[in-house]
Image 1 (cartoon, rainbow, N blue to C red):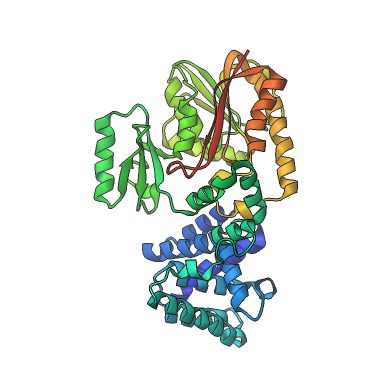
Image 2 (image 1 turned 90 degrees about the vertical axis):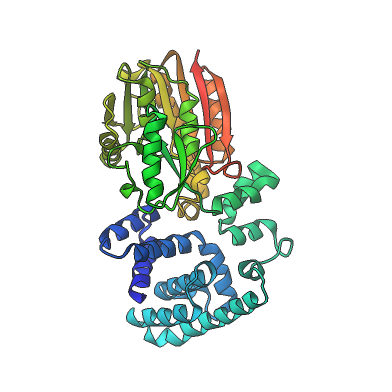
Length: 442
């Protein structure tokens, strides 16, 4: 088992040193060790994603109990201790096994001399958590500060493992609702399976039955008949119907945005920042063979991702192009009935899925995003025909990137709002935080 923990440790060390997205790191790791038992791969994923998600909370607890502060520890030791604390708090791994295998792991990585330190920090924490459990107390709740004991922003940061700068942004826009939003984002949500919108009830039911027989738990979305929430899916690529292109993994918030466009058969549609292609695929189903969807993104890598999804789902009325959305292409001007503009954003609505977003946000980064969004808007709104529709959307909760951008479009570019603005918050339903607004070119 220490080898399994060693693989998770390698992933955490790469995330800390490389700056790569955690989603890419864990995908590469699981592909590399695809020969492992499914339970072992699930444990690696749990450890890596859990420690990444809970890093601020874990570091707070460690700093209170260790003679050496987290920031001064060797990266290997720091991440071994984070994994140890995480296992004791959030998994059913026995404390004695966590301590033993953590010490062994430190030794194998060349830090045998620090084995006593690792053992002491973990064993003391094990005694503390076991004592709380024996008293029938909620362990984590009793280890964290109480509301009112410290500054509220710091309290929320520690409890929900979100940097204070993000807490401040959300609090500025949502006030007392902030903790409810943070709590919803920290929970595990089911996966949204969007079946092809043209499939009949019987066709969907047959696939659902096969999935349920394999142990997947499914619940139909109350608002969208061809969307199901799925739990215990395992590797979604191995689900019945995946290879046949019968469904696409897409959050319900994104699906609602595309539906709100009211796309008609025969429309000519442009998706400017399309990767991985979910909105384009649904739009292509709505516009049918009589219409077309052109999907663009900034790199060949992203374009290939869209193509792969188009191929799996057998999308016939689609074209993929590598194109920088911030640079206007005069040949596209007034060429489309509908333009989908899902711009690069701070991603505050999807922090529960992309766990490292929150650690990379800076004031400088937000300022550059603001400028990029305006540049993309200026470049892409000319593509809409007179009387045509524009969908502006983001996966963030920050009003400066949402409502303020809609105001920019209406005031500078002569568009009028026809639907929205709509902010979908994660504490309203099992969905990502998402924003969209449908506008019409006058």
